[in-house]
Image (cartoon, rainbow, N blue to C red; front, top):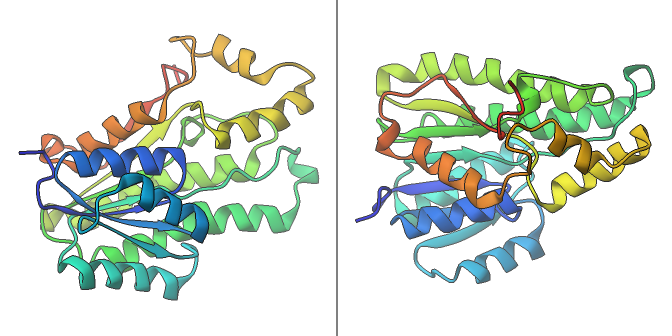
Length: 253
């Protein structure tokens, strides 16, 4: 039996590399997974790639929207009648600009997707999740550090730590654990886009610069993050709540 046998899971940002790798691992461990993403075509492609009819379903949603959040939670319950694991993983990076030049509309968009969406996931998911369940939130190494030019992204990822710690205390009487996974740079398209902008801003190869500042000297893989998320989702982490699990190759040290 897998460590998530018969458990029902929601994964937001499911069409992205970390979301998809996590959904695949959850399925391998016996879980049932509701895939949530804003991009319908990418979501449909992810669903086909997983190839587990009966154990997977998909819901297109703007995760920063209240009605859409209620809908994907309700759709999960309608499909399988329960909810055990909520992985709030969707996120965007914004742009790289000094704070004095940072576009207000982009700041607001980053906060909406990265913070409001997780608030809504907790607001509407927590009352429906089973006692003893697990909520995992994707933050980032810059949830505990920061760098010039990323005020929106860093502010949003720091905010998630405070949100997580609050929800962890509120959920504890029901034995629901709430934790953060904080990836460092991952070898995926999201990070490639970030590093392309950073390379221009710095006038040097941002990928090489980042690797030089990671003690393990490399970017992570989506599958490595998925295994860390699985630990937090499963009963193997039954005495872990209110924690920030760094999966960053030591970058925060």
